[in-house]
Length: 89
Image (cartoon, rainbow, N blue to C red; front, top):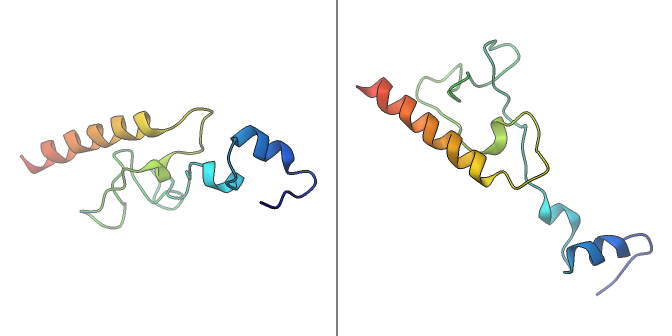
């Protein structure tokens, strides 16, 4: 495996030969909020412009935290599922 000068610390930190991008958790690509001019989703992660489109992955996060976001994404998906179930009643 090729090791460029300056990237040795990355390889040592990861303990594997994968690039630093392979460890990133993508977030912040679909912002949420009350104003459709600045946010694609409302506070229930429903698209402002499409009535039956919900986004429940980490893209609604404003940014990524210092820990794995899986449990937070799961908790939000359950919250949104409750909202959808209530809406369908």
